[in-house]
Length: 355
Image (cartoon, rainbow, N blue to C red; front, side, top):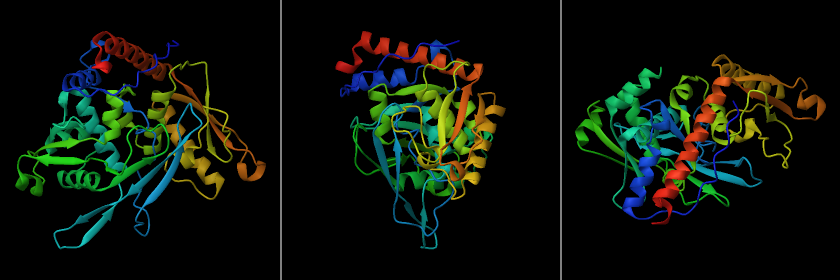
C-alpha cells in the first residue's frame, strides 16, 4: 500500500495568459481522469497556517500574530491577522475575525475552482471563482453545514475585509492582503438581499495563485474533510494528506501536543500552539482536547492513534500524539501522489512553467 512520494515541483512562476490557464486546467483536473467532484486541493502554507479562530477573540484586538513551523524545514512563518470592520444597517460597526464558518466557505469555493468554476483575473494576478449564493449554500448543506444566505454573504464580506500577511523567508508573495481580495457581482440589489440567485466572482489570496502557478498543491478528498465536525481534526487531516507523502499503515507519525519541541525533528509540530486552535494552561485539558480530535479521525476511519501517558507538567517531557494512517487514508495519499506525479509530468511535457 505504500505509495511513492511525488516528484519535486518546479518553482518558476508563469506569466503568460496561456500558461496560467493551462496551470488552472491542471489544478481542475479530476484525479486520474475520473469525473470526481469530491476532489479538491490543499494549498502549501495556506492550509496549515493558523488563519482561523474557533471563536471571536475577546476584546476585539486590532491584530493577532501567530507563528508556525513549515513541515520538513527548520524555518518559521508568522501570520499577521487583521479583522474585518463591517458597517451594519443601523450604522454601527461590527468587528469580526475569520472563524470556522469562513474556513469552510473558503474551502468550498476552492473546491468549486478545482471542479470547473475557476478562472483568471484580467491582470493575471488572481485565481477567481464564479458561483451563486444558492450554489454555495446547497454545496455546504449537502455536507451537513446549513448556513443561511445572509450569513454566507456576511462570511464573504468578512473575508473580503479582513487581511493576512505572511512574514518569513520562503513564503512566496508577501504583503498585507485580504483573504478574498476581490468580490464582485452582477446585481448589487440581489447581493444586498442575500438573494440565492446572486451571481458572484471572488478572487483568492495571492498565495493560492502562487501555489497553482508553482504546483504547490495536493489533491485530497473534500467530502472527507467536510464530514469532520471538529475544525482541528479537519486541519490535521489536511496537514497529513499534504505533507506526509510516504504513508503506510505500518508507520506511525508523532506530533507534539504541548510542551518542548525538538527542532531537529521534521515530523514534530506543536499542534496546540501552531494550529491556532485553543491550548489551555492546564496540560491535561489540552491533551483531552486533542484526544477528542484523534478520536474523531479514528471514528472517520482515517487513523489509529495513541497518546503518551505522561504529562508535561509532571515529567517535563512533551505529550505526543501518535497517528498511524488507516488503509483508507493511505489510499487517499497514494492517489494524491499519483496525481502529483502526473501533474509534474504534464507540466514538463507542455512546458507550462517556462513560457
